Structure formats: structure tokens, C-alpha cells
Image (cartoon, rainbow, N blue to C red; front, side, top):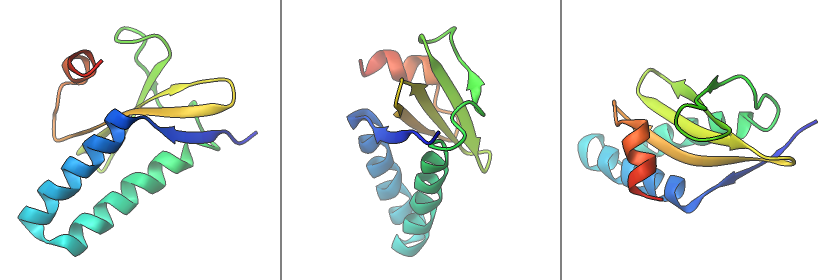
Length: 102
């Protein structure tokens, strides 16, 4: 059964910040391509939500997956949906980032 994927505001803001950073460093086309790949990976969780690693040590129900060894996508499973709670880039500390922006 496919679930709906929902981005929490924090994750949306993190993706916008990441897009801006990459656009400034490498150009808009590269930034857009990178964000498209992140978005596609997030959307793939609709069909395979349990493939990520459990991170119950940080937050109840939290799971993470990585993309291209640079991005960590943090999400929680709900009854009918997957909540994307964070999109972290290049070694940002998951526990600190989630705690800081509650």
C-alpha cells in the first residue's frame, strides 16, 4: 500500500537552503538537478517506507536514508503517510539539527 509523502516545514526550508547553497557554488541547473534527485528519493518512500535505518535513539518513529553519500533524509512513518522531517547535507548532525528546530 502506497503512503502519501508530506514534507514538514523544516525539511522544506532545509531543501531551499541547500538549493541556494548549491546554486551559488555550482550553478542553478546543477542545484535543480540535485534537488530533483532528493525529491525523487523522498517520494520513493511512498512505496518502500521501511527501507531506511531506524533512529529511535533520536526520535520515536524516526528513520533515515542517505543519498549519494552526501544527503541524509530523516522521516517518520505515520498510519497513512511518510513525514519528511529533515534533509541534511554533508555531515550535518542529525540529533542536534532536529533538537535545534523543534
